[in-house]
Length: 112
View 1 (tube, rainbow, N blue to C red):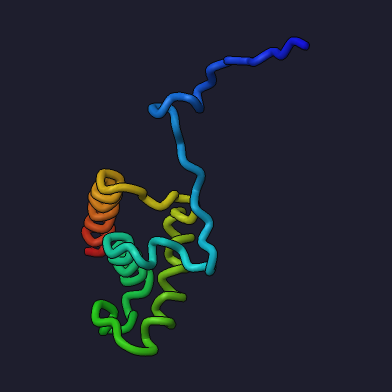
View 2: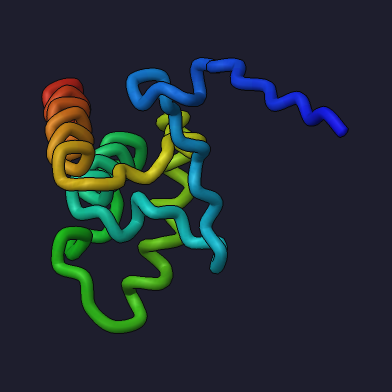
């Protein structure tokens, strides 16, 4: 009995062409709400869209966090970042942090 084994090489076999699938949160919470640079970007966007936002926006405490998370989750859709995959690894986290901080500074500059 003959068996044929196919040894076709595809782009998925090479690490340089690997693109991870976006991670869908299990509990419904987006990863940006727990990633500090992303959270700061979302806060800057919220302040830009709603200048009368809570003055204690950067001092999160108690029950205010849940109400703030709902508003920040809306900002993820406003910025169009809902489909962004979670950074995995040290280099990806640093790169994502820099990109988010640059975007946050652009939001802050456009406030004026």
